Length: 92
Image (cartoon, rainbow, N blue to C red; front, side, top):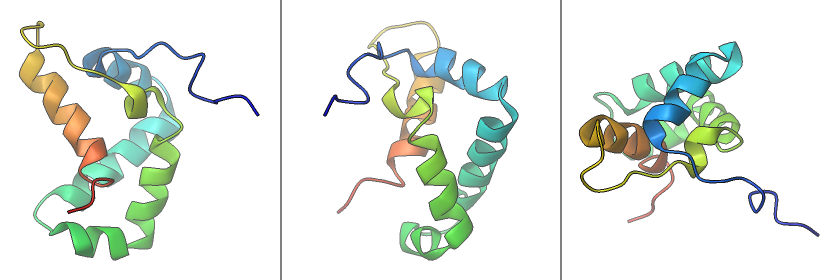
């Protein structure tokens, strides 16, 4: 089998966010995920079916592979986007 992520160049998260925003299914899932993360603890979020689905869909989007570079323009915004995806995935 071929690595499904192998051919994709990691894109910076600010750019990935713009790509996602331009795609209705991605942008709506991302909004869902942000709401899931806001004000709830992670375990509650992960128990919520809608949040799980949003996270699964976003794993197929450019946001999942996005990267941030130290000192880049909009670094803070980039990191916020990055962690909004990866906080839902990280364990411990």
